[in-house]
Image (cartoon, rainbow, N blue to C red):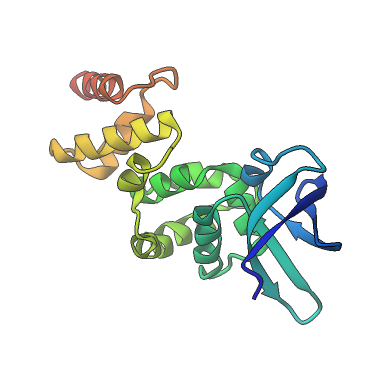
Length: 200
């Protein structure tokens, strides 16, 4: 198993990468979330990798962070999800956003990802809920650790706070959808959600 590569970035043509490691060129596929963090061609790069062995090919996948690779591996365990769809999911949303979708049971957000139908989204919500718990960093806790996206972190914290106030998860999800995307802080998101609840 090849778990890690460090070398010169020879070429990048999404989703393909070419990494020159000591004169050997490794071809990989990577999600767009990794492409966004890549340096210029010719620069040194380090990537976590996952090798998929098929009857007709050995496919190597590269990731800019261990968290991306861990989520990719968990996605592959879901019935009907292969490497291509797992890459698409990682390209369409950050790890933190995906974890929040699972915690909030937000099938609509998953369906907006190309190639993900309603049945696949519902299967992901069911199967990944337990897998993500084993992931060690379930949604809101994961969002508060490390360096998450501010809006996603604020949404997750607001979600946890509203559930703690006694609102049911499904109701919290509906309330959060009424909050304008321009609202960024946890406090403001909670205030707007409570206003929406009072108006009903």
